[in-house]
Amino acid sequence: MKVTEHIKKANGRTLFSFEILPPLKGQHIQSIFDTIDPLMEFKPPFIDVTYHREEYTYKELENGLLKKQVVKKRPGTVGICAAIQNKYQVDAIPHILCGGFTKEDTENFLIDLDFLGIENVMALRGDAVKSETYFKPEKEGHQYACELVSQIQDLNNGQYLDDELQNTSKTDFCIGVAGYPEKHMEAPSFDSDIHFLKKKIKKGASYIVTQMFFDNKKYFDFVDKCRSEGIIVPIIPGLKPIAIKKHLNLIPHRFKTDIPDDLIMAIVKCKDNAEVRQVGIEWCVEQSKELIKAGVPLVHYYSMGKSTNIKAIARQVF
Ligand code: FAD
Image (cartoon, rainbow, N blue to C red; front, side, top):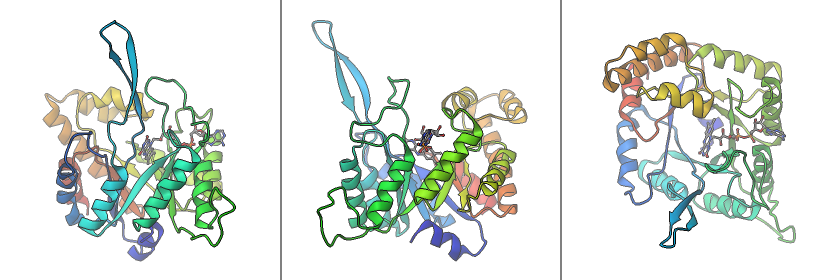
């Protein structure tokens, strides 16, 4: 079922959903099931599975020269989605990127998803590869997520890259896109970021999932701004509980997300990461409760491959 249909069916009740990462190459799929199993009692209507593009590594050769290698450390997004739908009978939502994909790769990826009965996709640009400063699309790929949304929408209209194909089958994907309550890190201004977010919706996206935030006011202001710009699709808040002290620096650095001073101070005072984890859970519970009271359609949790803290939060909230 489409995300928009799940929301409609819930009839105003806030739903619980979460995102998982494919395991590192070499690990068994059981590690995914071990993350999902404890969360199934909260009846997620769907589970997101992230996509991880290739990385460059350098191997030293005997002669001292370095050999560049391209590796995908977390492959398996599509296979995991199929396994989730098969094992749990809930919708799995694969993330799909511009980065590392030509338009042809994208089309073939979408055909696989369609054949597997996957009805939703989360369309993202992706970040620059780790060794590069700026995002570079493939030669025959997309520069921005709005172009990817267009391609998915074309396929929904039965328009394939080869326009000589006749009597084509139409896909019927519901498309999600990312939104940034604190502005995307590369956007020159908040207004320009909203402008391009609106473009993704115009091209065919049906819902937005936000980047993590720790201050609900940022989410509420973002929603107000989107509404005033005519963006009327559901805006699903994404939350992540802080779990280790290192997150205090990692999260602002990696996601350009601010952490409120009260939360920082509470974490700084913690003796160890067990205490940090508890503070992170309590903060996230309060955020979730306030969002639910405000009538959000869904609260979406970033599990980062660990379900124990998400379970502790969901128990108090759902
Ligand atoms: P875009 O919407 O393309 O925006 C990127 C930047 O370009 C923004 O600054 C925007 O303002 C600007 N822009 C957009 N369109 C135009 C235009 N036409 N002209 C000029 N400027 C423009 N990354 C992964 O690698 N894998 C994942 O699975 C993944 N999942 C995510 C899930 C969520 C909910 C979120 C919020 C992020 C996720 N990301 C993931 C990270 C995401 O790929 C990065 O944040 C990336 O830097 C931007 O992606 P985007 O789709 O928002 O890009």
